[in-house]
Image 1 (cartoon, helix red, strand yellow):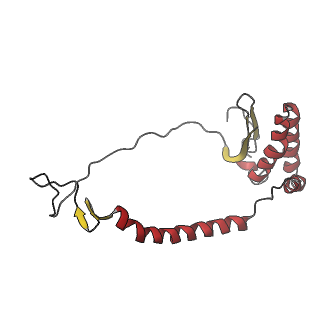
Image 2: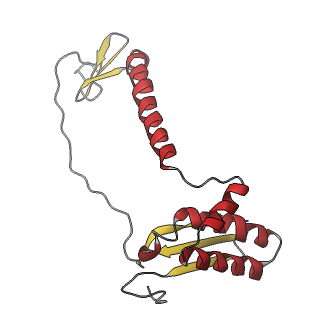
Image 3: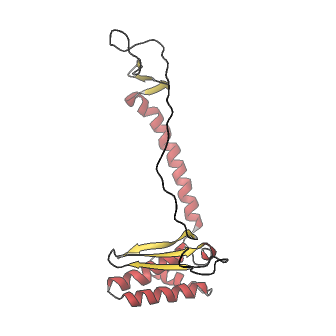
Length: 185
């Protein structure tokens, strides 16, 4: 935001960061370019242009190639970059793969969740209600004790106090929507 990258109204800035001492790099893309310079493109640029050059100690060459490829994509010619990604074993993102992965994930949660729901309660116990648990056929109320010091079998009550949540962070900003890619060498 402070560097005034791109055009403010278009939000079309791109930032290429290199931290040589940390051996890390990042391409940050403004909201206005996320549809053109996609995460796939920035990933291909990082992995195919920058990482190999930086590993060889050629920082100027890696940066120059990355900038050239970003300009090529922004000029409407991403095909060459995508083709190089395929040659290097990186197929472009396919939305069918994402749909399939989500489907398998939901199926696995339902399948393994139903198994866990029938197997785990006899082993680890079962919650019957607020403050009441059953394990190995016995009912426990750990928050209620009888006058003799043993566990009570009668009904019980429960109370809850208020609480608050703190933490997090505020501030920062910029006009990047999180698009881009990171890498290290």
